[in-house]
Length: 390
Length: 174
Image (tube, rainbow over all chains, first blue to last red; front, side):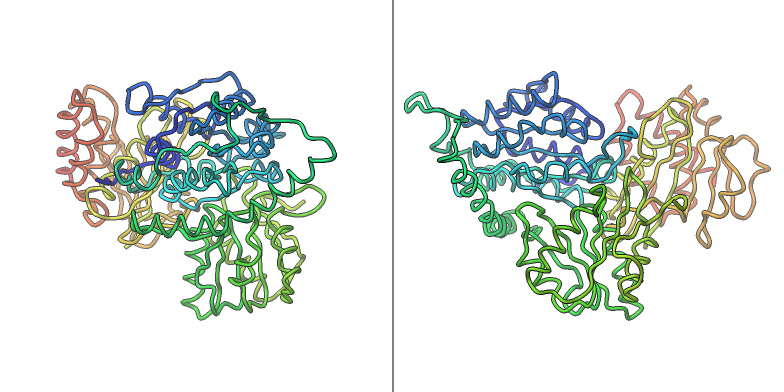
């Protein structure tokens, strides 16, 4: 039986992991992810999870252990944030290239210097090219549900790609809300035990893992990996449909629209700020302004077709980035803009940079973004809620 | 219905625990939706800290900080300042834990929650009393019955009984 609880995003993730019955968790604590791994270690300590919990000495080791355990076919989870993600980054392409279905929670946090523990999405952008599926969630319920869905996605033999679930630091990890914890039996039937992929370590059929490949073969490995990534779109939709049948909730596929169908202007968001933007869209609609929203759930693989379809005939599109690629623009903008150009989109695009280092993104800031879109005014890249003029 | 509440306290006084109990009561026992979140960042004993609640009949998606409030709760009267009047919505109230009842006016209600807590718990932990006061001032925000259930599900048995008494005593003050 499912039950309701008042949980923060970290606890919701921990519950999602517990219900997914991993064999191994290897993690190193870091703010704002700490409560998630503390909760998991206490689940294991109390015998509520039958799982090997490895409290390793660093994030680099957390990824190394995850690669090891996933290589023998064990369902494996890890979690990190910010500098921890950067420290483990050497291992990320090893995992994705070896086609290991590891699931990781990344509690999105800024990158030093200046040292800052608060939320933005700079960390995820640093590893966008690591070959991991990059998923962003909007609330604690979606965080819990997507842990369960992500194991199913990563372990699918057509996909065999690790998944990073991005959960906004503090805004989600430390905010408590009502969350439905599904019953274990229901999760067990939705997510059966991992089916060991044929390329993994097997004492009955020994073979090399993490092999080297010279210039005769390397490129084929990489293009195969690239092509298989695109299979994520269809699988994610199919998994979500099954999830809805089992649990009565749907989170959609790679991207989801909100009041976008007849919208004159659209804001594209990732993660928790989507929720605040929904409130603003509703209030603009009450004033007769045709504002809409597109929530990007996946940044890798990047859902070009869905995005173009959801944006439709909107005259201007704003992309909200909680990150910046120094000397260029926000990275979500670079991706969306390139994708829309390829599809022949003719409206103007704007890049709204906000929320760096935990700066609040207010409803007024989002109203200002929609004003800029409606009037099509100002520079292509604009900054919001600045404390002083620079 | 949407109620937005901000708690002001000092690290160690239990302001976020108060916010969490309020959110638990509203969401799990009053059948509403609720958020509870702390002022983000490092927690230091004695330093000013904030706690936030949103309570609504509908799912809450707003993730911005709360600047305009229906209630502002001060667990420590040294944190009260007249500039906080600017953070009130229309018909909003400020609730201050203080022995100085002369602070009370049409926008401010006072309760000596620390005094009550010392009498009942033997400890200066005033958050449960402030919750009782809040329920008395605005049953629409949270009911006393839901708070009782939230205390029962959240507190250790060793401190539960006294906190239930404290809640009741504070409730009866208004």
